Image 1 (cartoon, rainbow over the protein chains, first blue to last red):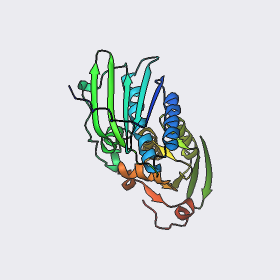
Image 2 (cartoon, each protein chain N blue to C red):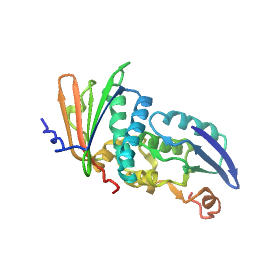
Image 3 (cartoon, each protein chain N blue to C red):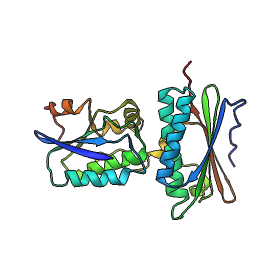
Image 4 (cartoon, chains in turn cyan, red):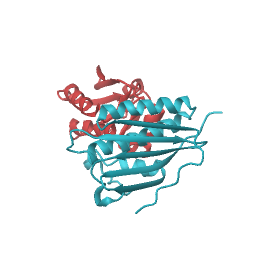
Length: 152
Length: 114
């Protein structure tokens, strides 16, 4: 059992989104998040990396947790404080393999045998802090923090 | 997404007209590139100047496009925006692809990769 990181003390903004587990709904949710972070004056570089990490996490849910399911819902909760964005992604699909977070390693980069996938978890590990995963019956919950510096 | 092909001496430049290469569009992109490049030979330069966002599915699709070209033909990239360039750096895919500042720079570049 991995302890999930605590909530930020006093978030400036809390956003909750709930959407169907399909690539187009994920794209719409990411656009929404980007707009919210832009409105909150989060720096462009941090916004871009937040969008990337959330894309990886949400696409993993669509492609793996809900693989073979006709429908499924994803809940995304974002909480922005002075310098970080705390994210919690909840789904009701299959658990992660072995019930644990995949490691940060990816395959080699032999040009003869380039990987077409496997980039996601290394990016997630690289760009997040306090990454935690919790499986309760029928429910996956992933929590992490992202750098979100704000323009003055 | 629209792909616009523009032949130049020695190869084909393809401009990706769209803001994102992501999980929702990766398959269309791969299929479109296959249709455009399948009967050609020579260099292929993909212009990503309009793309502001790429995820690992999009990156995987670009790798797949290079593999579709077959041995001896390498996919070259041009015009990466800062966010896209950063994803290539973070995944070390910047070592795999030849990356040019622009299509014009790619076309005038005589030193080609095998």
